Amino acid sequence: MSPVADSLSRPLRNLRLSVTDRCNLRCSYCMPEEHYVWLPKPNVLSFEEIVRVVDAFVALGVDEVRLTGGEPLLRSDLPVLVGMLAERRVLRDLAMTTNGVLLREHAAALRAAGLQRLTVSLDTLVPATFRRLARRDDLPRVLDGLEAARAAGFTELKIDTVVIAGENDDELAALLDFARGIGAELRFIEYMDVGGATQWTPQRVVSRASMLERLRASHGPIREIPRTDSAPAERFELRDGTRFGIIASVTKPFCATCDRSRLTADGMWFTCLYATHGTDLRELLRAGAGDDALRDCIRDGWRGRRDRGAEVRAGL
Ligand code: SAM
Ligand code: SF4
Ligand code: SF4
Image (cartoon, helix red, strand yellow):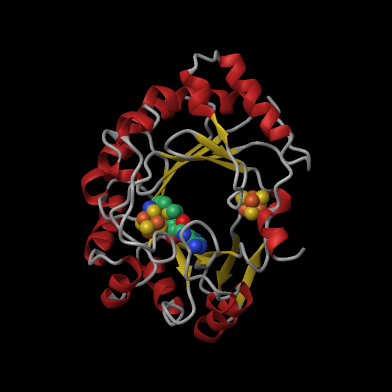
């Protein structure tokens, strides 16, 4: 079926599914303060509720689901949810983004349950920088988790690196070499002013152009790979065939083709990263709404969508 389109003709295709708000790291660009009030357990959607919502999205055109958080591996029995989602054959892509700390324990079970692709966030290879950025001493566990993921059969591994001026922007070349060494594709992400990024300033953003300039200096000529889809990452290739991506959310936003929305662990649906208002799908579910009503609510929400958060911020 053809996906429902929003008011700017963008299809609904991609759902970011947050399975928990909790995290075992405290990355300063995401969760800056030490004390958090986590969601009370009864407020978090059960697996059955999540699957009902996903089915409604799938009926409207979503064929890519990415599990995220907080840290998704903190959700108990996550492979059970993965198995329930993997049964939905129309889901072309079932992926997860994790900080990797608990991957050693869970990689094999996730793979066996049907998770197709894995992205691990890794901003630095320097233990002291990791400690400063993530406020925990877990770099060895993340590196070990990456190894476990490969051993479990995740061959399409990706590594996501948020680049922050003065923090890890001297490591672009080293991170690229590291990713190449383990057969993963690295994606550099421009630092965004979202969520808990309370220390964000424009000066701390390392632009796509600046990243490319630095990588040309370290690795020689870079070829841009022509786009074939609406994915946010632009992809590039080094002379030796190594591929990497850049997600230029700040300096080159991709709102014009944005087909993604986000469901929080407590069932709020947001149609843009920068959205301040969402739709409470949990309330609808728990009030006894049928599948039709759930679908209608999502369809209406998407049809009315006009979000262009990053473009608006960039003054485009
Ligand atoms: N905890 C998991 C992780 O870190 O991979 C999944 C959730 S995390 C919010 C998803 C991704 O968002 C991570 O790759 C993280 O680096 C990225 N992220 C968080 N805050 C960001 C910011 N201010 N700018 C750019 N990317 C950010
Ligand atoms: Fe946790 Fe991921 Fe945010 Fe870091 S980026 S604090 S690992 S949710
Ligand atoms: Fe999509 Fe909003 Fe990000 Fe633009 S800012 S790409 S509309 S999520």
